[in-house]
Length: 625
Ligand code: ADP
Ligand code: MG
Image (cartoon, rainbow, N blue to C red):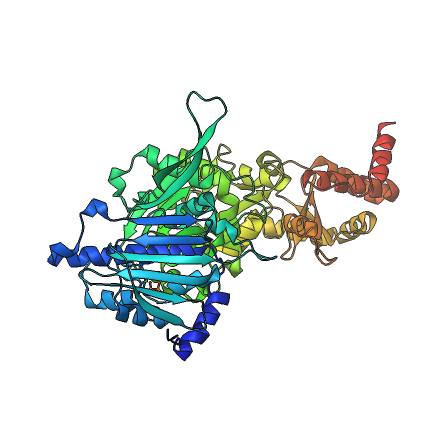
């Protein structure tokens, strides 16, 4: 029999196909099942106008058979089949899609055909060294057999087949050292693949399962029984109208797919129409998965194209700051043949990802406004991720996210959004004040925090490493700047008070220089009137706050340059200050010791360690005797 050559481009393509287009070999089954489903759709479509060509709706189906002895895996359908000419055209030319032609000829909405690229079929050669297609169309007096061993070419000849439809017979490759092909002859492996990729194909995908059963009455004796099972569940939950899906259905879908036995905090299930159309079913978990804050966690929604799974955890579907969202996206606009490598360039997918991001954002905003308790549960689990989102990418997303973040506030120690804070600001209040500490309580204990509270102003209490970086990235909210109370940015004085303080600092220059000298390591020493009853406190000058320096110095590649410029602030009105002034005149040695003590105390209040604990305890002991 004459062996026909694939067209030259086809040869190259076939080679490429077998070796590189698909990252996972196992998807060949998904491709064959999709083709079978398309073929049934076509036959069904034709029968709408020519009833005699079709079957009853419930007779349509796809059957998978495994013949271990022959080493074959067969996918059979009772779809439209192919004529000799169609076999030549559709399978003899790669990148020729009969399905695409069918789609453009029938522009009815009822056709939801999957194929359109004309390469899927060839993925069979990734696992088979020979593929045989036996096919018959309605009314034909003979069936045809197409056969190929890959790039060499193919043959087409007449053969026998009773029923209309196609059998795709894969002669599975023998195992090699690198690759086990025999799993494609294992019924459980095949069942798993159907579940994974083709669970929502509209037609039943069946397989004859062989299992050993105990023979009744005969102890220990088994016989093998064959039982035809349907492997796919057919109707994807997300394709149902949201109103028809029960809470329990969402919950069980979620727990099965994502192994989380706590119910999701919120489900977003919707269909988007417009430039790109897609259906989404998204879940916001109620707690962070155990590996969420590790690098093992993989973000991404599962992508489906008309019910066929294309990719699990497709990272491109979610920005990092929403990486906690789980769920599926189903769009017939996404091509089946997309691979991880081509994803980033995929325009449709980018448009969908954008729309999804916006949807999640609006829904979170709504949750914040309508159910504070739930939102706070959410925020406790994933708030850091949102704050990180503000900070990352040079603040590109800050506008989108700044109204979703919260901080504990001095107002009853409850969470506050920036909007709420600004809404409560006092008339004469110039800035949004915040204090940093290991816990909100510790932050509130800073001397400068007390001064701000005395003014009647609210304070945000920052306790996470990312917090101050987040606010620094936002820079201004509603025209108000953020002020860390432990920096030289803090200014609570009236013009008159400032003037007075400035004069005092000038006239005591000798004393202040002496203190700086005695303590060491300070950038400057000055009198202050914002210490809320405390004798002394630390603050910083320049852009780097004490808190930021602390966080940065923990980074693995922290250099020496990451130090805050420390300022020792001494209360202008505290009795201790009078004492120091007096000692400066009479007993410089003692004065220096007192200053060291004040500095050590200020460090403790700022959450810093005492630099020289031994010197400190000696000084205190000396005082006690
Ligand atoms: P695509 O599905 O993207 O069109 P394929 O390479 O998967 O590309 O298939 C090529 C063509 O072969 C299909 O468009 C279809 O016309 C035809 N075909 C493949 N499998 C079958 C089948 N089981 N029954 C009928 N036609 C089929
Ligand atoms: Mg196909």
